[in-house]
Image 1: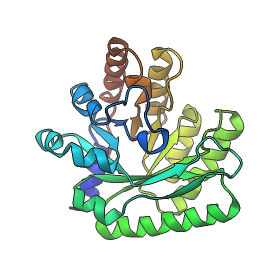
Image 2 (image 1 turned 45 degrees about the vertical axis):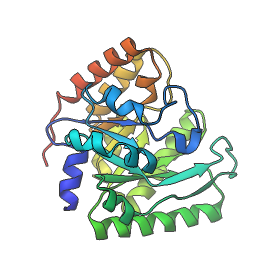
Image 3 (image 1 turned 180 degrees about the vertical axis):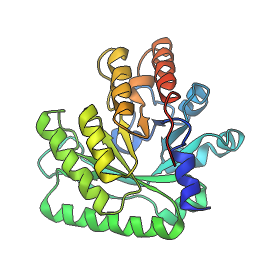
Length: 260
């Protein structure tokens, strides 16, 4: 399979992608709405999502399901970060599997965190780690979704500006897709136009009424993002509200096209 084939599966041209993340167990342990890690796939696959972001354990346990639903894409999380609540350089990051293993498992893309609230030494180490993963991804023709993030920090203007700076480092390290928490419509547009690398915008933790989530997605798409990564703002709501919110998001994503 070629890089272009996997990119087009992950980020289709005829709509914006809706990738539902359910990989939270790597950091959060047991989380509300994800008590049974294999449950979200059958529960939400029929609600117009294009794929899922998942752990190695979930990939192994759901092979039959995805074989029966080949239109759904799988993005494999290949790393972990702990302790995510410490904001002053106390966290630690490393890989949990390899790009080669991801290719063997047949997924469409791999995903890594790119946390920046770490010591200077660990920043250098994680840049080197990302560089090695990018080289493996290029060798195996599988895209890397890299996520610049200030872990555990409140969404202050300072944090948003810092994550935008780190997104540019992600570009220079060779990320094929950049996943970033919503920085606002104008910043999304500027990053899309200047970096010319596909952006996907993360929905983050459950917060606010559904209308805020839908409005953020609308701004995201107007800013030129190729898709949204939305999970807890869907599956941590009551089922009816989650379905209605996802349906509104899906309608927005089907109203855009990309020239690939």
